[in-house]
Image 1 (cartoon, rainbow, N blue to C red):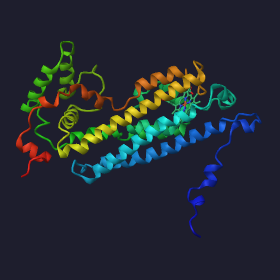
Image 2 (image 1 turned 90 degrees about the vertical axis):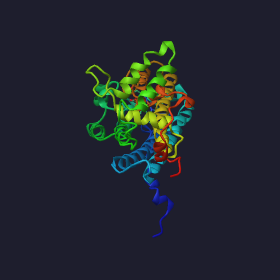
Image 3 (image 1 turned 135 degrees about the vertical axis):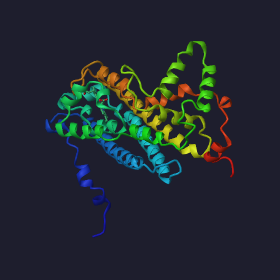
Image 4 (image 1 turned 60 degrees about the vertical axis):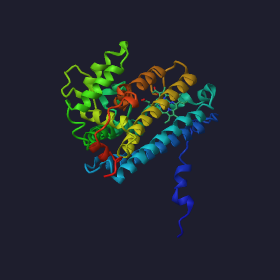
Length: 337
Ligand code: HEM
């Protein structure tokens, strides 16, 4: 039999998967259909995001992935697609907001205690990107509201190498030694001096942060937990500073894509939080959390790639960058041999 559009997309299943609670109770609630469909659309996109992130992780696991590898292009392409999907997810809040608080009240109580909080795909995605259980806001709430089998899925993702850990390992492998490896190398001494000179009086403490970020191999016990090692941070900063060189262009795009993903995820959290505020004010969520307050705390705490963003505090003006040796320039692809 010829393949038919309807069967290929399994539309029987998808289009029969909307069962408003209000219908079951014979109460009118026109907007419940929109509420169901928008959540289903989100979950489908979450599925696609997992598909992208899994493939990115699989490529980044390969020790042979280097900056000339054609696969790096694939990684960047899929990271950018991930960010684009997230951007669309932020805008889908517009559609949700066409539902007024009174429309929502028509069926809200029928949903209790179901909540978007129980979206295991969303939490699994956060874990795959690099959010660890110990850094989550409301840890008990998280384990008590999810089904056991869903907690297991998320725990598994938490135990595997996240994209954040993989990017750390990849940065550590950057073939830029000895520029990156030697703390006392003339390059870093020189750069540190130039950075120091660029600081305003009120920023002098940044030098301490600079040394900790790029050279502190053994942080003391009370030092903040870090995901990017000093060597990885040096590689990332080097990429940001010298991204004009051909060999560093894709690595730069890769770092940038991670920042874009974090920013879009955060935009989603804030838009969702504001929508919740508009919809239910300060009432508790259907999942039983403090509602807006819970969402605000999670939004503030659940950034994943902050350490990459923070490296931007250590940039200096392009015209003041140390010149690279001819040999290094050649390796980075500018000087003909
Ligand atoms: C009328 C619209 C919505 C309202 C009033 C609402 C409300 C809430 C509230 C109050 C929470 C906190 C947990 C709780 O106590 O329930 C929450 C969490 C959540 N909601 Fe929504 N939500 C809405 C729409 C959506 C949509 C369309 C999605 C898309 C999937 C979504 C996904 C989530 C997720 C993923 C969380 C967990 C966030 C985290 O733990 O950081 N929500 N929602």
